[in-house]
Amino acid sequence: MSLSAEAQKESMSSERISILLVDDMPLVRQGLRSLLEPHPHLTVVGEASDGLAAVELAHTLRPDVIVMDVHISRLDGVEATRRIKAILPHHCHRLVRSARSSRPRRDVECRRPGVCRQRHGDG
Image (tube, rainbow, N blue to C red; front, side, top):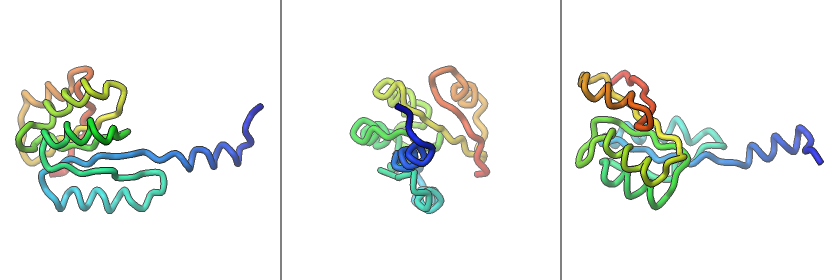
């Protein structure tokens, strides 16, 4: 038995995507949260200010998506992403590389398969 178009739409709208935000700057996390919260299908389930906290929260919360800056303390975004992928291999991770500092070696690491997807930020 197939679902009607209306029932399918209702089913899709009830599915929420959980998101973990990771950035060392509270203002950036707050800005991202304010952009995401108005969307009914998106839920920010947690925030972390460093890589180690991101790994711990990812393990506990198991978010669908993680938006993480590369340049964070205690454990950089690339290594934190590697560790999270070991815990949650099928989850989506988005690593945001800030344009405020250029590290060509890190750029190569970000592009390695299985490490992360990369988006160039404006800084």
